[in-house]
Image 1 (tube, protein in one colour):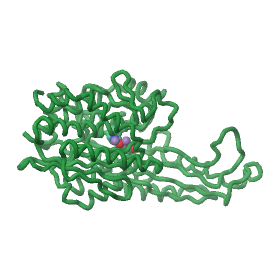
Image 2 (cartoon, rainbow, N blue to C red):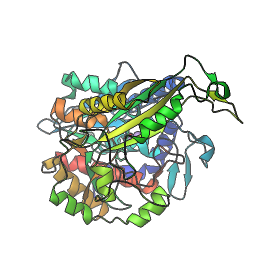
Image 3 (cartoon, rainbow, N blue to C red):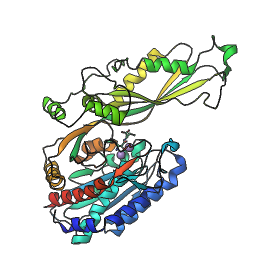
Image 4 (cartoon, rainbow, N blue to C red):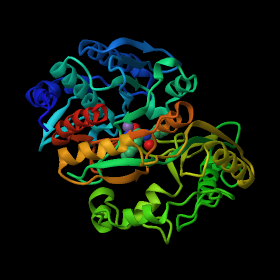
Length: 456
Ligand code: BES
Ligand code: MN
Ligand code: MN
């Protein structure tokens, strides 16, 4: 690890960390219209930094959402071109009172940096930017050609970047993508993610009476949309976790025996996972599949919230006129969002209880992806990671989704290297999200050495 870029990164670590804190103070919550300006502020801060470190052609790309950030450096004649991707938007911070320090006041505690977006994904894009800065500052040039593309709508489905990528603009011409938005399988264990689940995110609206009604006067005669929603949800999967939508599992491509064998040798303790990560008294899910199979290679149905009705203090006796439920499904290789939505929609319409109207809406969707590992970029990554972490890389999948990764493959023909440095217990999307400071530091070094390896 004798590269002068690595030395630069080590010397400048505390400045890098201060700068990351400044980025984390911007509450760029993409789903909340009240934070629209904050999302733009985060995009502008990233653009300014990319220009400052020496990238060129920097600009914001506007679409129907938050801006994309683009910049490039294309002076490594004869070398490959990397498309570096990450997202600057973050999840909403609620429930606020569960945070030990405020979500947008980054705070160091026990070797971690606590803030919304610290791990997902600002800490990781900052590691990418600081790797580029270190290379440019130490050498005056980059070891390969670089295009950077950051989005601000990942947490809400990534429509803007999807449209941009689908238009195959010349300025995305590259040989591979580098995505830093995933996790290490365990602390200190170098990891590349090679598969993600896809998803459809839907809203189910159920309408009963023409207006809210007194529940004593009309209870027994008027339909209750919340009860109808409960009946519908109860029919989506059985108590053993088997999804009841006809045809839903058709066409699923199971992991190969080799991949399953590799998962079996990962350091995974189901009881420890239950206790420390999940914290429930028992795990649930389909019989006959391990936890890793259930979360990485099987589809699921989840209910996120059922807004509406009476949620104030105390009691109110009312039969609400309507109810909605936010319901999503994770998809695995062999499934497509369009088909999954069609099957779900016709099933819900068929099982709709009497007396109510149901409407099923698609909010956003993304394809599942599975990445071939036999290419020089993955090989360069494992060499770099071995050097930095002193261990062989494990290949994992993840149950989460990054919609654009599938599009990089379909539209641009790019293989992705998903090299990320968060940890399973970083509480992404939850209160007290954190990023391990050592992982921030080694993440920067890993990215530097990876880019140097690809360019060498
Ligand atoms: N970074 C996550 C996805 C992820 C999580 C990858 C854990 C690997 C390990 C990403 O920001 C995310 O949360 N995506 C959303 C996408 C959705 C809104 C389309 C998700 O998975 O819910
Ligand atoms: Mn993310
Ligand atoms: Mn996320």
